[in-house]
Length: 96
Image (tube, rainbow, N blue to C red; front, top):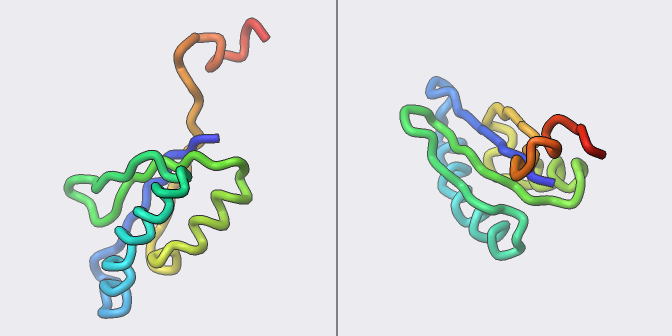
């Protein structure tokens, strides 16, 4: 299961503790990439946060990985499930 996770920080909430957590986030991303749980990660230009694509076995696994993130308690998240688009039937559900 693939998910696009957009996370964002409010600039007004940046404290030394939050800045430390942000500094730890790349190391956490590298760990997830090594485990093949994270396909890619991007900075969203003009925003304070990122866009990461997770490849996990379940919703529960995604919840656990997000909760283990150093920035979990400081960021707001938008989680979007992704579907393959190689064939229109995979999106419309027709042909099943």
